[in-house]
Amino acid sequence: MAKDTLYLLPMGFDKEGQQRFCPDCAMMEGYLAAFPQLRDVLDIVRVDYARPRAALVERLGEDHQNAPTLILAEPAPDAGPHGEILSANGQSFLSDARPITRWLAGRYGLPAPL
Image (cartoon, rainbow, N blue to C red; front, side, top):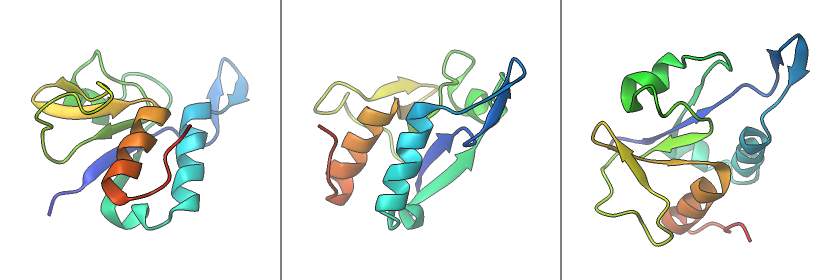
C-alpha cells in the first residue's frame, strides 16, 4: 500500500547567516514524537531550506514548495471537511501544520489541534 509523504525542513538551517527553524515543521516533529506510530504509516522526507526544493517541485510544481507539506498517496475526491486539501499535478496535498495534523488525526484516530 502506498504511503502518504510528509515533507519537512530540517530542525535547524542557515538563513542569511543565522541559524533558524521552521515553527510549523517543529510542530510536526512534536506531533510525530507524541504519536510515533505515524512514522510507520508515512514516508517522511526532509528537504533543504533553499529553493527550489526539488522533491516538492517534481511532485507538485514550482508554486507548491512549502514545508511542511503532506502529499496524499491517493487523490482526494474533494477538499475535505475543512476545505484544506489542495491539488496540483494530479496530486492531493495539505500544506501547513494545522491542516496536516487535523487530517492525520481524522485518518488515524489521533488527537486533533484546537
